[in-house]
Length: 158
Image (cartoon, rainbow, N blue to C red; front, side, top):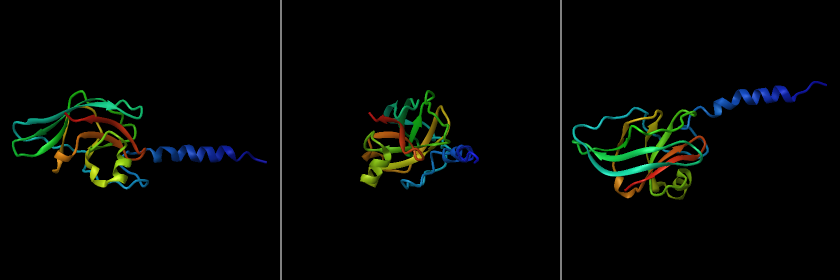
C-alpha cells in the first residue's frame, strides 16, 4: 500500500502561498473597498492637525510616526513619516481611521461607522493618503491585514 500522506501534504504546501498573497482580500469579513496603493501628494503648505506614534500589534514590526495634515486645497491626509516601517510579506496592509486600537474586524462588525478605510500601503517610508472627509469622529489610525484579520499596528492621535 502506498503512502498517501506525502501527496496530500505536497498539495497543501503548494496551495498555502496562494492563501497569503495579499492582506487586501478577505472573504471572512467583508471590508469596504480600499483605494489603490498610490499615494497623493498634498498641495502647497501643510498644517498638522494631529500626530501619532505607531505601536506594533499582533507580533508585527509596524512602527513609525504619522501625522494628519491639511494642505492648501483644504484636503486632509494621513501622512506616514520617513521612519514608517511594516511587514508586507502578504502584499498590502489597509490603513483605517478608527475609534479604538482594537481589532478592526471586530469594530466593523459591532458598528460599521466606527471605522473608515483610508487606503492600502505596500512600502515603507514617507507617503500620504487622502482622507475623503469625516476625520473628526476618529481617534486612531490602525494598520490592518484583511487576510489574517489582525491589526498590524495602531497610532492613537493626539
